[in-house]
Length: 153
Length: 153
Image (tube, each protein chain N blue to C red):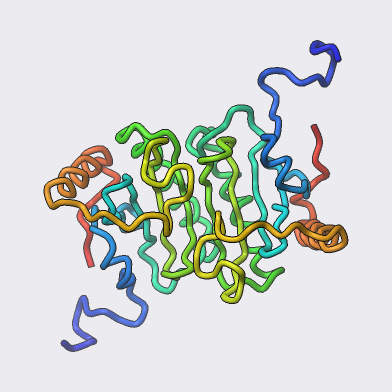
């Protein structure tokens, strides 16, 4: 492929980190982020990834995009807690293993597999069955409405 | 104490959760939050607690205070990463054990005690020696300047 061709990747194009691509399903794109469903059926676990090249920390975003990320995170968190009847929302930007900035949003229940511990590294992931995955993604897409478009690029 | 006396606590006054009070030292108050140093010398680990009664989730704050919390979190994170020469910042609102909304800000180093795992539940806390605690708090107070006032109430 000719790297100069229209639509070709360049060194500064957003590309989802390979580990996130392997661990998650794409739900759609918000104004700023790619929204992912993590492939662990034990928790409703979603990840927001700002579609910006080389981004590691929230404070590296320009001010207007920091605010947009906050708005999208708040909207996602509230929506997920209502949709899945959560007891507590966990929101976290860690990035020790996958440095590309990504914000976890995990709906916790007091009877879930890891409660009250954080979810990371506690229990092996339980991959979704195809129908359960599709159903979960469709519910979230419907709940998000205009906030979410099909992912592109 | 007479509960009707001026300055007395009422049912809707912010009170720091007893577990946070036991695990942390008070650094000061920002416009919205109480800033705490967690008593674990293995990591520069700070916690922002919005001074609002009964608050559990970020999305429960009014819009203007969501933005203020974001600004304070970003300023804290950037300042701490510079001050402690961090490799990665971990920012998280979990609250499974202590439900009062609190945002962890942990400066991670690739040679720290838990790297690359999240810090929670990995290693027993190593309490600060008094002089090391005072030095750390003073450095952060100096770096924060006008953003931070002595804690009150």
